[in-house]
Image (cartoon, rainbow over all chains, first blue to last red):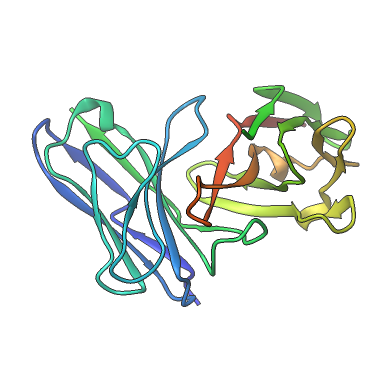
Length: 114
Length: 117
């Protein structure tokens, strides 16, 4: 099993450009999440999905959109990139949502917006 | 409300000496708590979790953590540090998301552990 994979690993964008980050999981997990990691701030939740065809906002959703057309994939889109979106983005998945269910993380995508 | 505080942003120890990474949480009920490790340029990997069973939890790579309700703490320890333990460690508490019935992770700000030769 590959677990959680992310594409691409690195990307540099100019302000105003758009891009899509792809997350895929092969564990048949219902829940998927997108986080961003910034120095000294831990991870913050951008959007999440509780199942195929559903999405919901997390703590820092502004400037991002997501889609979950297939159970195994969760896409994160930036329509008009801004320097404030320079960050490392992590995708995660969990079998269900419960207090004891752990999340499994991908390797991350390092995005720089100039 | 629930939150989690990692008391040290950086910890340095010598190889072979004990490791202590401190985490305090605030919770209105018995929480689930996790420790994750992140090696440089890698994703997060689960070290261990507490889910209201045994208060002393053993994890991978010789790490363990003790849930102390009276102190609202969940400190991570290891008896003897290895160079390969150099990484960033995150304490995480799981809490209900509003009235949705779903849970979310609340992350601490991380502790960067450096093991010196």
